[in-house]
Amino acid sequence: MKKSSEKKLSDEETAIINDFMNAEFKKEQYFKYKGYEIIIIKEAIKKSKNIDTYLYSLTDWKAMNKNRSINDARDLYFLDSLQINRIKSEIEKETVYHWKTSDFKNVKVNLLNYEELSESINKGKYLKGKLIVYLSRPLIIDKNNAFISFDIGNGDMGFYPITHFTVSMKKENDKWIQSKFYEDGVF
Image (cartoon, rainbow, N blue to C red):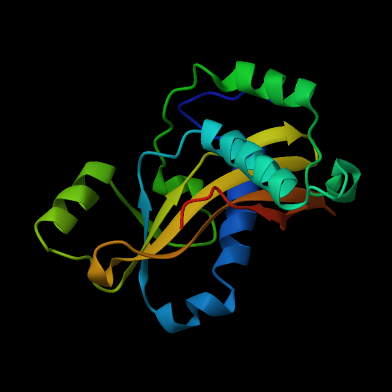
């Protein structure tokens, strides 16, 4: 896994995050939000959320599919225990990354501190006409695989959830595409 400065995204991380944003906001579920401003929560979700969600999803898959072998899900759950332990060890002391508007190349975004979002919701001052995105810094597994965790909500009624997942991004033809989605058990 590539290490990168906590103060700046690497070129690869920038490519991953921008390819993710481009693909995500082209989905049909966002059509009704055309014209909404995109707000990124400044404090990124820690990378550990990516691996925790992956492990939760794997455990859940095993419980739901007791009659099937893990080989049936080899494509979906492609990390082995050694890789998982190595990744957890590498990110255990990570600090929170703070997004910059310059991190987003193809989508115009504004930033908001998490505490400001909480305060506005608690005071009933909703962020009408805004999509709120809480996003992890990419967790790069190898040169062709990465994870991103995200929560996207509608600010019209506080932070009304639209979707949240951890997604594996796969590099194909120098572009990062959304590959597999993992649920964290929170609905």
